[in-house]
Length: 436
Ligand code: HEM
Image 1 (cartoon, helix red, strand yellow):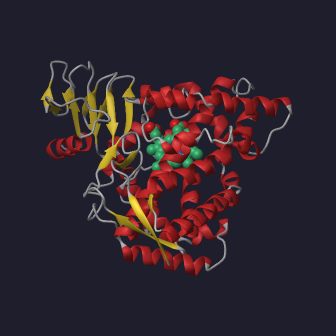
Image 2 (cartoon, protein in one colour; image 1 turned 180 degrees about the horizontal axis):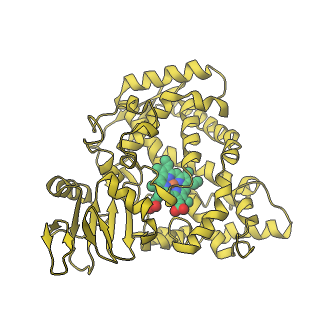
Image 3 (cartoon, helix red, strand yellow; image 1 turned 120 degrees about the horizontal axis):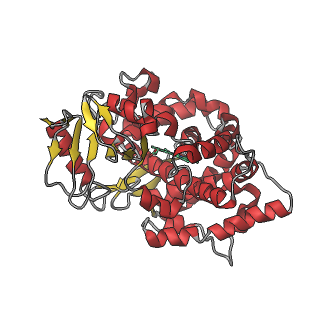
């Protein structure tokens, strides 16, 4: 702890640290600094003029994401994300973000999500058939790719409904396959994916020409009006939001479901209990939306997987003005790192933090002693807009697949985390499909 002439109190400073960001050993580096310095430290990485503050106390997290959120903009890494997502909801800030969020929020109303039940069931029923044939052929599956395909199909159908077939069939090829076939999220990928924008806007133009507004996410965004100006979204903004919902709406859910399958393969008792609950509540019929509330243990499994492997493992912010955090001075223009991954594995808030224990969530998220120690969907006004959508999607997926299949993990290389924007395994997680 040091005190400057200006009487500001600064948190401990880590010297000689490589640049913080999405670098391969970032998890080890943050872990050891948190162990050494506690809930807040700062780093001035070579080549950067500002400080990065890493914060790891629920009260500090509450301050940045909620109480004083107006002082914090989207931070490090979002310039790269912008190449892919443009100025859609994930990237935008300030008044523009607020207006866009107000226009898009109704599409995520619970009633709308309830209406997606059938689509989610259909997509997972198709997956059931594919897994059945993989099982018969004894083929291993790459679980992330499988989950990515099913969640991508769901979000694309939720966006484009009746127009999806024309979008996904171009000379016998589906141009959206690049999202699931390519794992890199670099500049080349961003250019190739954004090139699909032309196809998506053709659908929008055709709908306008035919005066046709289907009841899907794109339809809802096309008819949304800004509260103040009464104007609809400009085409450029509409496209950015569509692209944002495609990417944000499938990669995180795919990653969560992959971790769930992996964790279940390592915890047969939890898997058996999950199976038993689904059998008891639903039996051999198709699940319905009204069943979901009863799937209490299923909910615990999802919550616990999101605790151990939060897909968004890092929430970066940038301070606009000077601020105070835990008595320390935060300089204007500083980067702030909040990591759900470390908050979720902190033994002050979690007993046996590294263990998979779904029942720790049996009294619900609200019963947690420290609310901001669990933030897989972030918190405050920038909380994930798709949290409920993804919960419904994950529960229905498990309700449909768990009664039929078990997945066995085939370790080909040791499991290693890859902390990009999305927390994934460095090497593919290969699983064998086993019949029940
Ligand atoms: C398990 C699944 C999911 C997880 C863990 C997750 C997590 C998150 C997190 C942590 C943020 C905040 C990021 C930040 O502020 O820096 C976020 C924002 C967002 N998410 Fe999700 N998400 C999931 C599913 C979805 C789905 C299904 C959709 C859409 C269909 C979606 C759309 C968005 C959007 C548009 C934002 C930006 C919201 C705003 O700033 O107004 N997410 N998500």
